[in-house]
Image (cartoon, rainbow, N blue to C red):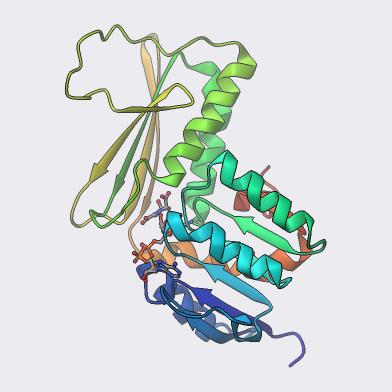
Length: 249
Ligand SMILES: NC(=O)C1=CN([C@@H]2O[C@H](COP(=O)(O)OP(=O)(O)OC[C@H]3O[C@@H](n4cnc5c(N)ncnc54)[C@H](O)[C@@H]3O)[C@@H](O)[C@H]2O)C=CC1
Ligand SMILES: O=C(O)C1=N[C@H](C(=O)O)C[C@H](O)C1
């Protein structure tokens, strides 16, 4: 049984945490050794080799630092990782050489492909907008996936020398044009019945390209989470995006 990976979950009582606990329990090569949620003492993390962290943006950095401080690898799904937070985390990880942290804004394979396709398409289109649609219990907007998608598109546009997206709006008292991430308009919809969905709309003269991904169930994230758990030990340092483990980046 020496190949079995011991896994603990932080945020275990949440929608994602509970789904991860079931997926880990069902995987023959993984052993669920700890479930932690708000207020719990993380202590020695139940002796885990790998921790999966799905909590809230305000708590995630401290939770991940607790794990890293003990040399435990972490797979992080929680959103809200600003450059400032990442920089603090990189310093903590540098003090624990060999420890790996994977931060993935989205673990669904189709969502990773959607971001990759959008990055590829970005330089060919003058106009682009991102629409993300989620369940109404989501606390953050825009979604981590939308922010990441806009960043990738914005960087590709910068590299291609494209200017700002065309937009003649001068009157928008209610914020109908949405927010901006890396200069890209991003719109957040919250609707009962939805799980996690995103459309990227590209426009050029006489044509439009739509790239859409839908997660209808949280099971869609589990193959990516488990792939991260199995591989994080082979990727020391901080990695942002599961695409780096999948040969897509
Ligand atoms: N990367 C991905 O593929 C995905 C990421 N997410 C992200 O995961 C996060 C969690 O999403 P959900 O499970 O839907 O939320 P949720 O609200 O159902 O669960 C969050 C859990 O974290 C717990 N929590 C709060 N503070 C904590 C702390 N200090 N320490 C430990 N646990 C704490 C809560 O009690 C709750 O049980 C969000 O940031 C969401 O955007 C969600 C789905 C997929
Ligand atoms: O809160 C969610 O549900 C999700 N959060 C992630 C995000 O913010 O991008 C991933 C997925 O969209 C589901």
